[in-house]
Figure 1 (cartoon, protein in one colour):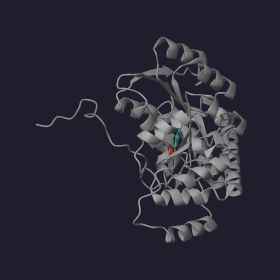
Figure 2 (cartoon, helix red, strand yellow):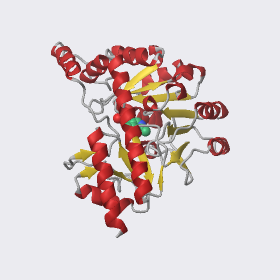
Figure 3 (cartoon, helix red, strand yellow):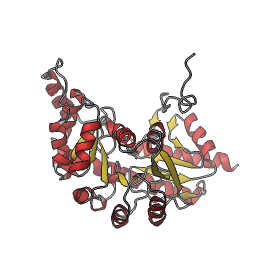
Figure 4 (cartoon, helix red, strand yellow):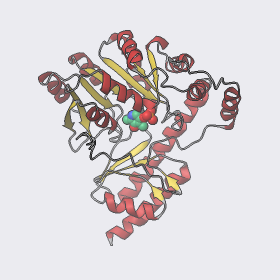
Length: 355
Ligand SMILES: *Cc1c(COP(=O)(O)O)cnc(C)c1O
């Protein structure tokens, strides 16, 4: 009889919200679809595609478009089927089975997920109540345990906090571990906090970027890893040759033809988050529904409350989806009217729960 491997028996398929909600503020996507002129351009390009040919294994044009927009050397860029795939490849290929990796929780769950699947020995450093990263603790833990890989997001999903650039540099320079610095939300923070401009100086740094958040392309699945030439050559060697299908390459390449649109739509999302955050703070001053609202550096707001489950359910009844972490709630910024609706609903919920 066939027996499932022990690490697999209790695994459950990923279960995102799939029911129909009037308002979806749970997944940190961009709330806007692409504009019509871009959709037209994409349709035109796909009309000319050679469906019978395998894709370009290095997604050359797509990587060039990314490199132009972010001002990096295209020779240091590797595209993946979402940054998810790149996390999976790096945790699976850059460590031998049983080697140690650090995650700093709470953080993006995929680092731990893929690390465990690849039989890496995961050391979980827990953030305190302020949800900040203690860089000294990370350095100490890495050195004492011969850690081979450290993965974290900056600014962080879900904490919404950012580690300043100088601190990240200090970490990279202090350890012999490979660092996967996931900058999925950096477009929403400050360009001068990114390490993209110095990535080539380090032999132990991959920076991840994605088209799924500020750039509004979550459906298409495009992510990027940027690292020095040695790391890039290895990543290109170990990835599946045709990991980026031609449709995704065409759409992503077209996206980067419109840098002004990307800048403008990123700014609109930032404005929406600023407005959501300030409405939530105002509401909370009046109702004291939440224990704490964390300072946001991305496109969502992170909230601490013991009432997370109750609030989550009450919003669900009103057909509003947000993300529930048990003791925390995360609300993605949406259209102005969606932001208003969720804050109004929370005001009502505060009245109900306080009775
Ligand atoms: C959403 C997100 C990503 C993006 O993943 P894709 O696979 O590119 O869609 C990566 N890292 C973090 C921390 C995220 O929240």
